[in-house]
Image (tube, rainbow, N blue to C red; front, side, top):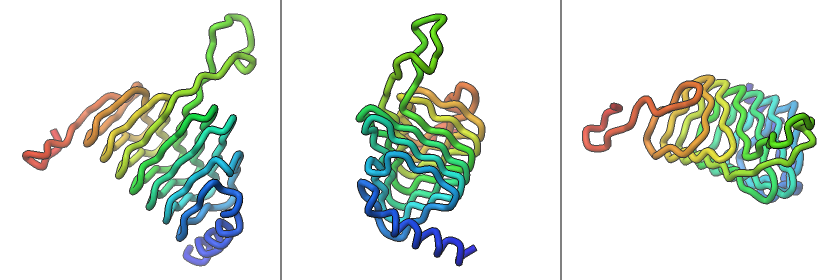
Length: 183
């Protein structure tokens, strides 16, 4: 596996000039789809496994902090000069979808793909963990040190130090700093 990651690292160095910013010691697995790379800003040691699809439309920015690990088949869409931020030290499991774009559906009877898009800033806080198959919807703001359960659908604002799960995701635990326990 280490030799494969070495090839992924070399390939990411070749791609580096096409990014807005790309820190050292990271890699991007193959195959991958990267649309709008000039709007991608990756910190140091960003590790992305195969099957990724990253899209930037209308100058949307994808900002990934240092020391982030992203599992297979990750799909992320950003657009319209909005930012989608993934904080440093975050781990994202496989088959996760994150976006800051929604299709509107105000014109009943007209194809949804022909209707205007809506954009909302989306933020994943530092040192968070996103479980397998989770969906993070536009406008979501996760605090630092959050855990999102597998297959959860997340929309809304959530404070630091909490565990979310379900469809729709709700807080099921909060970390108590006074007792150093999850309640």
